[in-house]
Image 1 (tube, rainbow over the protein chains, first blue to last red):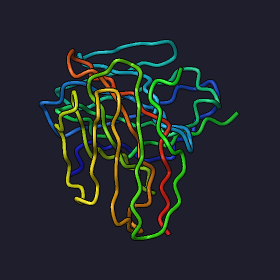
Image 2: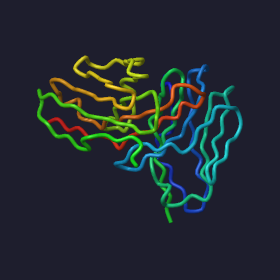
Image 3: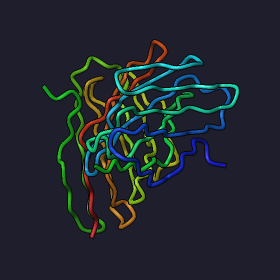
Image 4: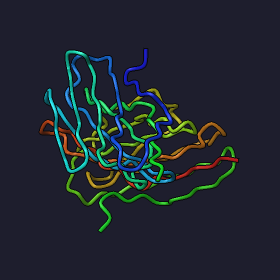
Length: 108
Length: 114
């Protein structure tokens, strides 16, 4: 079983819609949870982190964490073509472990 | 100012050669990392140094040797390069205390072994 699992996609949404990205993790001791965005040919860029159950909002982004279900998600409201990228979920428990990433395409 | 920088950005070399990648951070972080991203874009940690001390050493061939001269620098030396070493190598840094452990990545070094 993969430690951090994401649907690799691609996920395609129309401009202005809500994009929902999901991630599950296997280690119940995991402490912190991160979402990185990676454009093609670029490095991962941290966009959100969360460590408490519930929602955390930052602009158009909302991270949601449910430790009981071992599930973390990222919602992107009012999706823009510039949001098209690979989104990496990462979980910290002594080290940062990444999922395989979800490719998001926002089409005009 | 670049927060985490790496040199070189591209590295093309032949099998059997030895090469080094350098990383520097100016964020005042005390922990630095090397990650490898393969052709399927899977990002995996290789090494982690905290204040010049090796704290994470994943299952990596011993041809890979990290060196940290000080807490702002972490270099990666690779001996006897193989075709399978072709990948993008990212350096990252973070604080070790606190709760969030946010890591910031350098621009990457694309290594191609021919």
